[in-house]
Image (cartoon, helix red, strand yellow):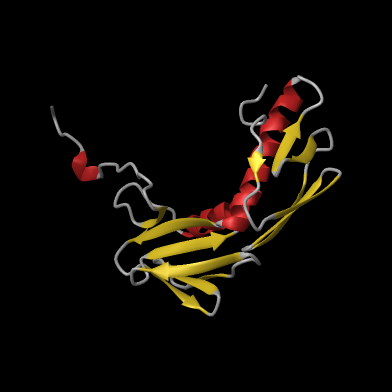
Length: 183
């Protein structure tokens, strides 16, 4: 049995879960999330917890069991605490600013790059335009938007300039001057 799938998802105080067939809606203090799951998975409420069970032990059902439970746990965490991804900008003259709700990046192009957040996502700027914060209640959407912001100017391996996740290690390469001549 899946170790992740068989663990029940505890429902904290102030969170409402509505299950109709394979469609689950979770409401909490930060908002509301809704998602449809595979119809083979059985999702039920038992003693203030969400329990996921699978019909058989075949490979696809085992995979869906853990996935369904993990997605439900992410929904419950999202409506109670929310999710956040931090990015940092490195490079001389590289910076970010807010223009209304939109994020405006100045990262070495001849033009400014403006990114509009989808509903449920908010951008923030910290440390004088050198740090970007992506926040929201949907873990998948927060990760996707952070990846989209990073994709504007990914960190390059020679000088390390660009947009990276906080704590991300970028492997540096030696340039032409780093070659050993006539060893």
